[in-house]
Amino acid sequence: MAESFDYVAFAREFEKRHGRPPTAGELEKNAAHFERVVTVHTPEETQAEIERINASYKPSLGERLKTGLSFVTRNFFKAILILLQTPVYLTLFFFNLIKSTIGVLIIWFVSKMMIALGLSLTVAYFYDDDLTKVPKFLSGLGNLLLGPNYNFLSGVGGDPNFFPNENIDVIIIIVAIIFLALVITFSKIEINA
Image (cartoon, rainbow, N blue to C red; front, top):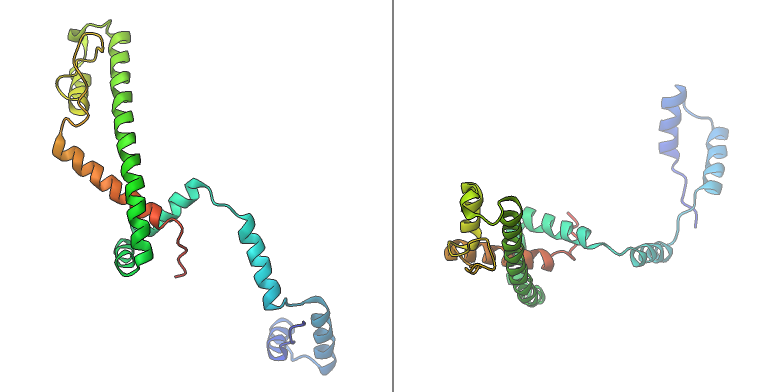
């Protein structure tokens, strides 16, 4: 299917370029040339091409997170409104809330164990297991993250406390869980604004 030739647009463009209106012969010559070169696909062909491109495109986890983060941060209240008005998204949000709760708690405990291991290895390697040589900054960081009963040496005694500051830790965990659930829920949405 060929697209029709726009005589008015061609005449205006020709007049801008050459300073005079085109002759009838020039109009016919360019119309014939235009119809031979430019073709427009049918809507079915265009839709098939778009579906082929979309089927071959698989977004990475980073792209999905970027999409979800951009939607949640720019349109936070819109996201909450969509959650409340649409039962499908509300259901999806609750399933994602469960998944993000499990993920955040696992990450919380693993990161606390890695911090305890890192601090213990730092004290053992750099300070020869002598707690009196440990700088106040490092011991203060250990007390803040792991509690005052943790003494940096696993064999001597003391256990890391995973929630040394209960109120602050619970607030951080709850905010992270809700935020990640929103990001996961809206990471599949395309915004046509």
